[in-house]
Length: 250
Image (cartoon, rainbow, N blue to C red):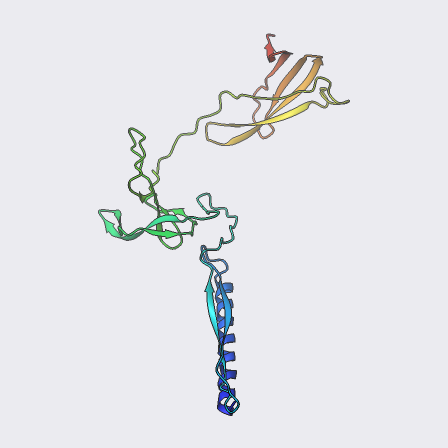
């Protein structure tokens, strides 16, 4: 091998290592980029022919290996509209091309992505961080028929609904026939919690306290720990039989 060949071989090795570091740098820089897939690096040797009088220098290159078909990491998020796909598949999306009469217009070309960090835009469309609009099958608002012949950008109606306060709850519970010592008494009742909503849509936790009067007879009282009003708290006697508990008229 000549001096020039030795230098070329060394430079080729340095260039290959430089490219490998570049791929690592890209992976680190995009570690928080939604939908990004890492790039691996493989080193490939170039072999040459040699004989008893000549030894041609070899070389090496760094080849990027793209892992677009490998499942990415699914990260937890506070975004209630964030989506992720486990396994095979893509989100069907459209690209916005402009706006006409205040309504977005879209490229008819169908695109696909794994980036599911969707958010509602001002028009109610689901848009990810790349500016792509999530597509779905349209539903006839009158008949409820789903049209599976075409995909359209999903638009969520920006409608406010008045909260409905809780007026009735259904409780399924299992009380012990023989409570543990010191429980099921007025000083240490058996408690269960349910959630209810007020007229403003605020959730409240209601505690039901159960006190055993006799083998099959219990008294249940209601408590709302976060209620600062002086509203009366209710209670009822419940008689248990083969079909469950039945309130006993007072």
